[in-house]
Amino acid sequence: LNGRSFTLSDHLGKPIVLCFFMSNCPACKSEVPHLNSVHQKYVDSEELMVIGIGIRAGIAEFVQSQGVQYLVLQDDENETVSDLYGVWSVPHNVFINRQGKITRQIAQSLSESELEQYIDEIL
Image (cartoon, rainbow, N blue to C red; front, top):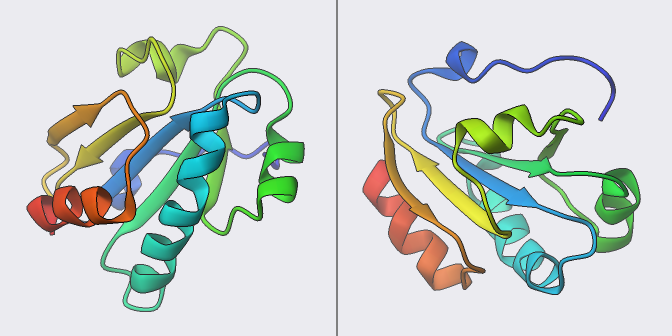
């Protein structure tokens, strides 16, 4: 959101959860508290990264109004990153292990316990 680019390969060796969302998506809003909780659990140990990827307009306002605590990136206007990961609906969660391999993609809102279950698979 600050105009700087971000490269996932710079974080190889660290499990990552990518959370694609749109600002007008009710299910995306309901997932934020769960993602915040998971982020807080791992932020100090740096064992896991939670990254939100906003699609289209209104992302900065969404981050502020929903109290998002994890890193949020903005996809470009061509939705290049979304296309790369095959995102066709939101929320869309991608779980990436330490080797950089996608272990699971889920195109629905997840509960905190579901997030933890899938995170356990990539830790």
